Length: 391
Image (cartoon, rainbow, N blue to C red; front, side, top):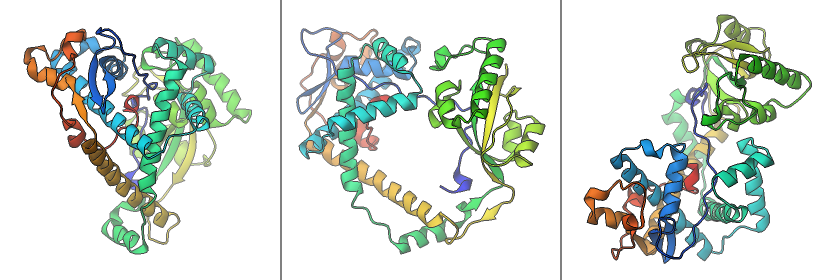
């Protein structure tokens, strides 16, 4: 909200959202269709839990200790239960999305991922998912969003609320001296294990050729954010290259050369971009090529007032979001209490304490149990998860 609160996400490791999960079928009791839990009779399969863990660990779930794996299973299953509970409530309140909304949601997911249609289809195949299953999960996400929006739409923020917040938090309303940047990176290292598949450069020569080609694209009028999403080899590609706001000291501490810092705080104009530049940083000691776009520049620290441009609107948005979080938590609590939840995985852990981290998952590990309980994790972590793959 305020400049002071903006974090500088310079080269930060941000886990990209994985693809949405598909529901598994029923049939004979096998590891693939073992029932981990039910919500009002609707099955949540152990295979779904394992798939989320695989995505969250980058396929390295075998490196988890038995206790870590057991904890991960419980947490993931709790999120899946919450999601199913909210979806069913949205369905009951006739808040299902249209087919056009589902298509639009999937298209946006493709765009945000920076993948081509071919890459997206390959990712689906690698995850053993079909487009029909993906549409079903998008349907759940949108239904939950409609449910949350229904209650959030009743929130009202008055002038007194805004003024009280400002008076209690004046120290936060500061435009500090600094710059807001976006970037495009070409990395000579192999980034395939990090989920970066945007024509990944494999060596110094390829990286230099790539960054020069990108520079010519930008000089030709290409949109910086669009190019970043399509070609950057940094996790910031999902945000169109945006890496946030930073002071001079912060830039220098993350490896920015002094002449580049001087350029950003000196003659460079907002909206322009740098020539390709290569340097090392604590995060990437081997060095990478970059092009930076200057999105904002403040040469003096400025204390903001309620009459400063955008302040009232920013406070209104912040207060609204705070209320939304509380309403969403209440929604989870109410919907969970109304639902009949059977957590077979948790019940079997209690019945078999020595088998918490059974690996690989088997039918015996999460065989349907007779114990019925509301999800304890849903109460301890009430914020709803609209998609388990987005955690």
